[in-house]
Length: 88
Image (tube, rainbow, N blue to C red; front, side):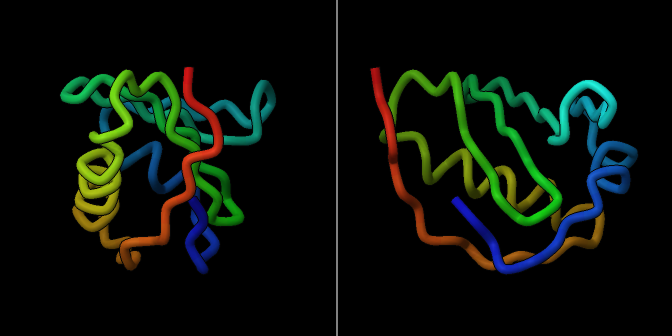
C-alpha cells in the first residue's frame, strides 16, 4: 500500500514500540504487531508492505492498527487503497 506522504522513520522508531530502524542495514522501518501476527515494512516515501500475515482477511485490521499507531505520535494518514500482490 502507498500513502501520499513522506514519513520520518526516525520519528516513528522513537515513538512506537516494536519497531526497528537501522538505515545502514535496511532503508525501511520494521514494525511488528502481535494480534494479528504481522510485520510491516515502512519506507520514507510512504510505501508500506505487510508481510507474515497468515490470513488476508485480517489486512484491514492491520492497516487500522498501523493508522492508529502513527496517529498516536502525531502522524495522520488516510486509510489507503489496498492491493494484495502475493499470497502463499
